[in-house]
Image 1 (cartoon, rainbow, N blue to C red):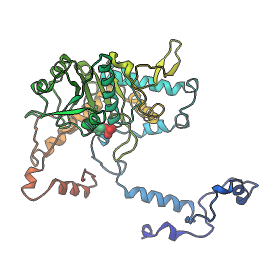
Image 2 (image 1 turned 90 degrees about the vertical axis):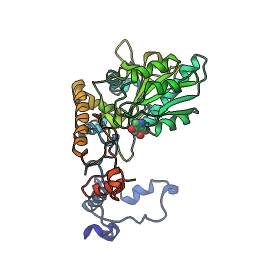
Image 3 (image 1 turned 45 degrees about the horizontal axis):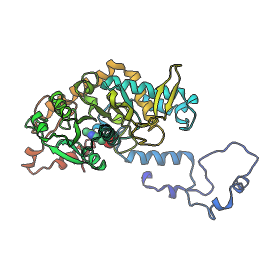
Length: 412
Ligand SMILES: *Cc1c(COP(=O)(O)O)cnc(C)c1O
């Protein structure tokens, strides 16, 4: 019952939810020091309640939303990772959270060191020697990658204008190509749900900037022809971009740079602890091969020979700035804390568990649902509601029913 009472109805004139330190000045004195043009003519009609009532009001509101701390929330890659609270605590430490982005490098050596080392960790996981932490979303990482491709071709005096993208790709891939002013060549996956080298060879020519591939792809399948596909694209002068949104499936097992990719983005909010799902700020770091490092967004954190870190703004070949300051710094602290806590072995274990769990769930439901590509999957798989449809049950009915069990499945 009490939950249905509005906080306004609980208001008692004169009641407050705070105690100010003793001061010789009255509230009127304090108010009079605020210039008149910024003062309200009349008091705001706010409820006057005690502190516990305010607290309960907001806590009650927070539990009306479904969220990852309240129940299972399988809304996609952002929610499918491990989110230890300790990393949020690390990001909230006052030394980080009170730090102003315009402080001189000498005053923020610790922050710069974290950024530098996180770049190294991501480099070890991916095989790419240069990493920019500046982009704040996977999509912005993609845009950074395409700008890098443009800079690379421009340096060779080439103007290419098409990008090859598989039909299974995430919507941001074609959207980013369009934003870059280029045209998408969409190619089809084969009967096994992956891309065949022949399909790429047919689409590839000297007008193609490069190709974007997600691995494992959005069907949860490993693109086992990558090395051959990279050779085909490179032979005609194109570059290979890996959409790394699904990196959670292969940390410490497969390094994208080793198979011939030239660049990738990391969705730190899908792989490295950052809470996400339902929106909120992200982090879309980008890793590139050595030859492309000079094009990465500016500024770049460098370590000088005297051991000092600094933000290097003198990057004449850089694609420029993608975001204010250095990107979402608190997310870098989270990802850093996660890597430090788990270590290389721990990150590999995360991926092994993700793959094992997905295959386990697949085995549990495969007798009841059609599985269109029934191979061992990576960290996710696709099930079809075809069989249920014949009985008059739609997939949206199934996902709505999951809500009754406290699981917020994608229900549109
Ligand atoms: C989530 C996702 C993206 C886009 O990442 P955002 O951080 O949401 O911009 C790109 N590709 C794939 C495969 C994804 O899952």
